[in-house]
Image 1 (cartoon, one colour):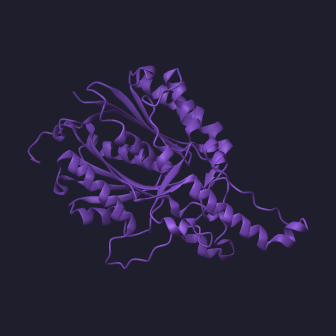
Image 2 (tube, rainbow, N blue to C red):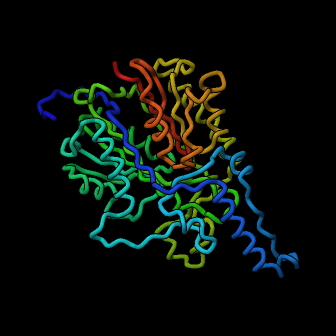
Image 3 (tube, rainbow, N blue to C red):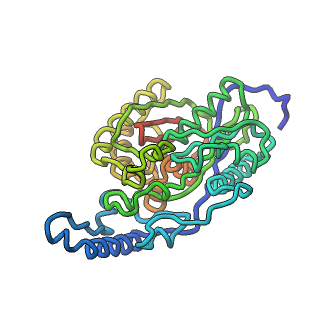
Length: 380
């Protein structure tokens, strides 16, 4: 890439990348494991349950999961320990400081694919943003480790906006382009959500899956011919305790709370549904109007993949009719909720067929609450 090229200050998406773990867990496998855990727990606590001093745990079912979420399977980094009723969570050997950490490893895999698809060398990239729901450690930043592994001379930092991390990362990258502070920025979202999921909680044990995505945001002047113009980005946050995770470095100051359920993902699903759907639908419509885009004319919606019902309602409010699979594609059924990566997976897998001039929307929403919209148009 020539440094003499005159920059435009117009951000585009040049390419995306996706890393999918090899292992997948079906609802049938998950339910069999969970119900075995429930049977063991109820048997072990039979006396107190019989005495009315404790409630028995309820079994899960495939029908319940699919009705509640639309999820049929999910990819994970470690299948056996998640399904083992004794561990019910991911397990792997701790890596030395000289080895690439797990989040960096899958982030690098997604980033390399994005670079390859854009015909870009790592030396052409100016910055790496690692945008995800959880970081493996506080420092050194995952982004800097990914930057080092790829051989990028520039800067990197981590950012966490829960399920909206990727869209917030895209706007941040776009702002660097707009301001002239960078020409090429990688937004990498390694989401190992199996680590924060309470696999013993019937209401949420089926929700999450592991994945990594990458989005290459660049100045239009250097973008490959096949790219997406970013027409506008908008971010919004509203404080809510309805999705929360209290795990953090100050937990050691309150040892009595360590290991409690609130140190993993916890949500009030019905409240989230009721509050987030109207907020996001209104945000999309008003932002489309501000940009001079007819929301009903959007060719495709790549929505956050958390819940099939939420997506159905949001799409209907935006498009004015019930969206079909072509207008609002789903990856939730095979990937589960992958936090910030969900809308990017949908875009990565379901955007090649659009033609020049087609306009679409990448949209996230989740804990915070946080929501992000990225309106894009396929370049001519």
